[in-house]
Amino acid sequence: MERSELSKLVRVLGREFVQRGMHVHAGKLRIYYLALRRGLATPGRSEVDVHWSEDLVVEWLKLLRIPPYESAYRVRTAQSPCSR
Image (cartoon, rainbow, N blue to C red; front, side, top):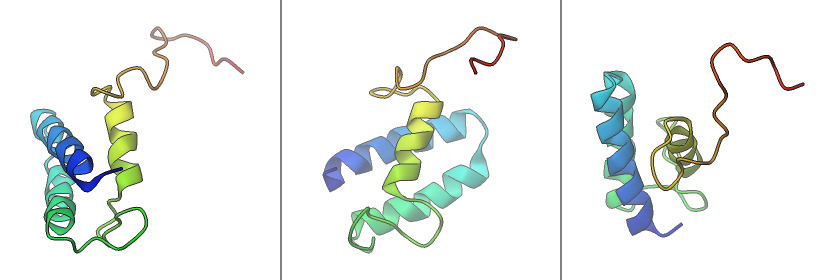
């Protein structure tokens, strides 16, 4: 993923964390964002040793159903049985 695209998604996720009161997550994500913007993220998957990475950003976007990942996981009705 291009750095500019990832930075945009990190900003969206950060706003969502703050809106949901997830301030510890938002604080750690800010460090990741700063490292990403300054080119301090390690090669490969743009990982920074604050336990945030590109993969984790995308996973949170999927879990919180934030575009463009709002349809990544199927939403099941409340108290529905396990599909196994």
